[in-house]
Length: 386
Image 1 (tube, one colour):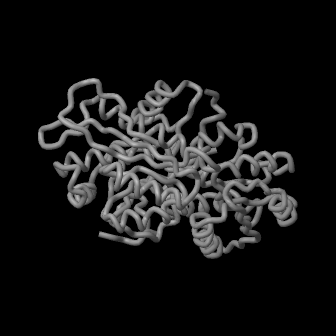
Image 2 (cartoon, helix red, strand yellow):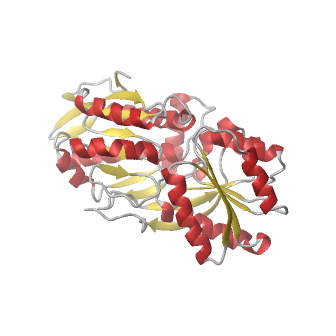
Image 3 (cartoon, helix red, strand yellow):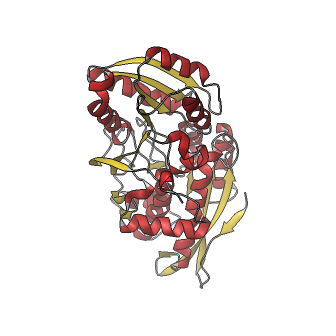
């Protein structure tokens, strides 16, 4: 793995941000690891896009959740009431299609009888799944940064909300570049809930900082028609300017390759992305994203003991050429948070007991210590990488 594939950490901000933009609120079966004797099995569900435009990002979440399950099984499984249980998982493909996420959630709950589902990436997929989990009074772990402003007893969120990612990143951009390029920004995003809501928050923040949003464009997920957007950016910023990117999926491949072809040099156009991490860099090509910025809560290059152990385990399982990233770390964490809650509750079948036990659970995660709060979100450290 080359050093170009890991983000250089530039800043760590708001180490205990809790998320003030949140609303407060009280395939077939597989097993992994675990060659020893167990007293029983616990079925869990994994639901991510393994095909379609979001597969570029979501396939890795399935891999790292499988890794966490294998680690737990290899360590004797989930301990409940003096017994050891092996985790057996069923994986389904959301296929980058939001109604499919709802249908597969229904299957996992009704047909496969899983105790919990780990799944999703886009807010559109989460919004499609939410009514299923609320109607069934079941629960979902959701691993990705999102727009906040949501409360459900049926979802636990291990990704960041805007004040744990986007807002500190915008502050950082203005501190670093406002004097050079003026307080003007151009917003580019995918056309669905998270980018639009996050950018609404960002526009208000930019205004409060005395700045101006001079352009705002959205394209459908999977769309690669970015040339008109690039032309607008160059017209608004002939001498350079700040670009904030909330594109998701493989649209980013087209964006960054065409940025380079059009002469959008990061030295003149500071670009901050909120959905580009190490895996996307690997697939886009580091030569196209070098010099740009990303804001996350975890980077592979963090260098702590927990981070190094996480990276080594993943590379050993999937290959030395692979990388880890924030969404993967978040997905990994949620499996261990669920395990800890089941063991604390002394049951995996009583979902209310498991939900209650999750509150206050702490974990020495690869990103650092995290804790699940009563609003079903976790503490986060905001980091800027280049």
